[in-house]
Image (tube, rainbow, N blue to C red):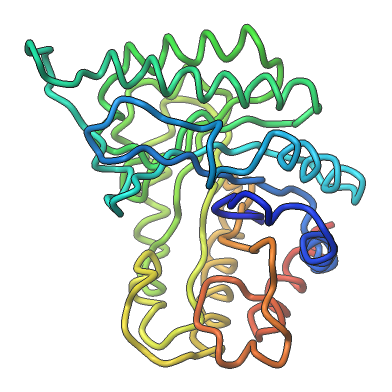
Length: 303
């Protein structure tokens, strides 16, 4: 399960955060992606001010890792970059070739590298079992040389497993999967397309001979969301049944693929809504909803 997104400063410690993580562990979660975001101004900005608010402090990050480990969970530390103006990180992009006076990929990767290496060092000190070097950076995925150089640097400070979280439909497009230990992607696929998409992924990753899991996967508890689970703003009323049906279909389809190693479901916030508010909540979190029982039954049957 992914915990704590987006890592807003001041929300990762205290009774509510403790209750959240304990409740998550109780449904059979044995791995958690502790996910935080740093915010650059626009998709063409070259500075990532990760030491500033709203990003959680290092102390909060360490506290979350230690809490998860104390509860018996393994940890993936997942630092992610977002844009303050709302542009999705997949659209962070610069000219293919440098042009005088224009922001460059080189400038951006220098700042992004500092950001990633900072958290890789924390992951090493705190014994995180896995580290994620990037998430859904679709326009940046083609910058193979820069990613390879960054991963080499990460390995100088971090000794655990390294993954990259590509976006949906991108699994076969990356040319540098050999640089990481585990392939992962965001599995937001329509409820009626799971077999088709798993066939495609299987063909696309076969040549790399690497383990695979979904670093993100899930569906809002909202009418219509099972057909477009990646759209967090899709109009529709709350529907626990829609979310539960999606998880049942996803688990059933994936359980038949022996190359599929697991899920880092999306998501479980640091502050939970009250259980009596669950029926009216239409977000991804399945706490106190019908889908929670689906997840618990699936996870505990495999523990």
